[in-house]
Image 1: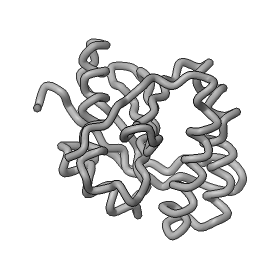
Image 2: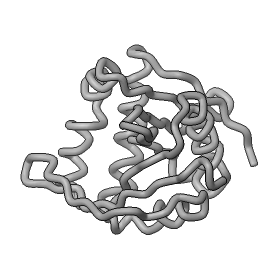
Image 3: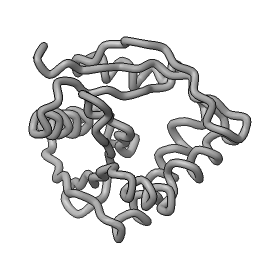
Image 4: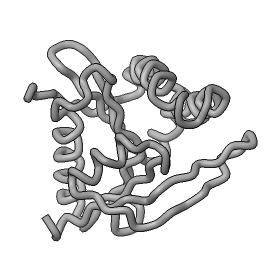
Length: 167
């Protein structure tokens, strides 16, 4: 397994992260939710300006590096007694190599350092590869949610949770 470097992102990193999001989202999500919703969500949630606003709202962003190459990113924030893992993305050609596990281990450390007892995320119900990966890492489906995100689109997701005291 190749070891990655995880660095806290700041405002100046957001354009590179947004460019990476564009690549990952078009490839990964177009077959799941279609090109129109991908386009909408890239603009609403994954653009540099959207991420900049999220930073102001207390969302932490991190860049994932392999050598000198930006290969992924993640973001999270505290939501009640949980750390909400809002985003975790890795380039497709590097999936299945333990990078996601390293990123989730980092998130677990962050949750523990904040005194939180669980990590929560949402994942599209038809994103079977990601669901399987999360389950392998110890996440459990706890709820189904449908959220209206505007533009005539919804997110049809599972809520998944990892309980730190169970590990």
